[in-house]
Length: 344
Length: 279
Image 1 (cartoon, rainbow over the protein chains, first blue to last red):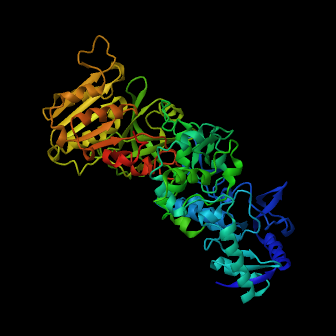
Image 2 (cartoon, rainbow over the protein chains, first blue to last red; image 1 turned 90 degrees about the horizontal axis):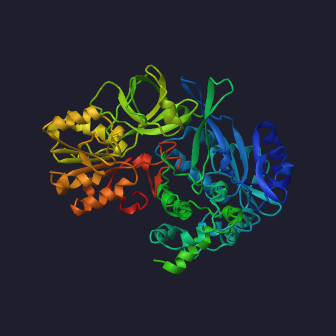
């Protein structure tokens, strides 16, 4: 795959040309924060952002989506969102999360709804320029990413180093001005990567992330779950802003004609009351502490077992910022366990 | 749509089935016999389906018929939520959506061959167990002694009463029944289902024990079985959980690291040792 160096002005020309051809989602300012949204002009693009309010998961798994339509008493018809789009400005930790979701939605039972969107997406990732207040991607090994994107963009001062990761990305690179990246540009990029591998670490995990499944293997009865959950609102904010939370609900909606309708899936959250409640009102995780523990076990033990040991927390820090009672910080929970239970 | 998605089937899409027979079993339970419109339906006792009523939603229901019965398949549905209430209004000839059969955790039809079987059922727990009971009775020579324990809260809630009566009459089935809150006309055992365990004639240590009932029942049954030193590897529990997708994605049915919809709903008790949320 090729690596080019392109000036920021030329990249803006490329982005504007792209907007003319296809739907482009990019990072933009939202007040004094940032978020993904439809991009109308390259001048609105903010590749110097720290973190977005919401992760990009909504472009593959929307908050609500129609799975199928039906006629009452009649047949069901699959519906798929089938529009190509470009996702511009994905940080490495979010890319790592998308890579994990790709695996989860393909394994065992292939989810055509997620995968149709995923296959329609062209992802232009970009390395972090400014660390956010709560990022700990360095601790989770997701400060840089080596796959999943079509194009990876690295700000090396006045210009970007762009590298394609797929044939789709290779085509995009061909449309960009700029020359093959020289040694100096590649060295600058290496410097950015080395810096980010160390410095995207506002909360420092006291162990190698790969040790977390074993740590949790001996922490099930630890008092930290109860202590933390005592102030948990069970609001599900941590679920909502998490790039690797993908639990969902499925519900029917009847149209005004009362003859047709649609079946939708909508985000759900394992912290919410009722998530495990069955008919007859029996709730399997009725305690907030059980739900709080379940989420962190999913991140660092249960889901990793399904995806070759990758920890399903990518260190974006969004839950830390979103949690009103300030109990969600996974690093502080895991560090507390390390302090009490030791490593090994 | 890309080729890999067009070639794969939509895992959430129900197929249509026709209600061949529908009747009330009592105030809360309704019996349905269904036939898939495309004819295809092979299953193993213990598997479940997602029952779909357009405009209302889906609910996971374990199949109550044995696959040895070739004429469609049967469900018994308690009226307790939105979907199940809607199912209760369905009459013969109505269309219903079905996804499945689902669940890789089935009854041990092969492993149990040649062994004595003890079915412990609480209330509506008889419904899933009946799939394996009738499978065993239709392949009677393949299995050892059969003991069925049925505990029901009150007389009016008894299910498959005529079938139970037929099992009672058989020489090759030991059918024991108890009612927890009996009225005057009940002359049989009184109390919860665990009270019947001491009456089991088969050697429990070597038997395969199959348990299904309300969530609260399991720990009491397991405590009783512990007194008889039943090896945990011989006990199979049919667990209920909230399910939305039924295909290992939505997260609702997760028991620690395990998806009830994928690895269950029937679990070997010894496999639950690492799943403290199971019981």
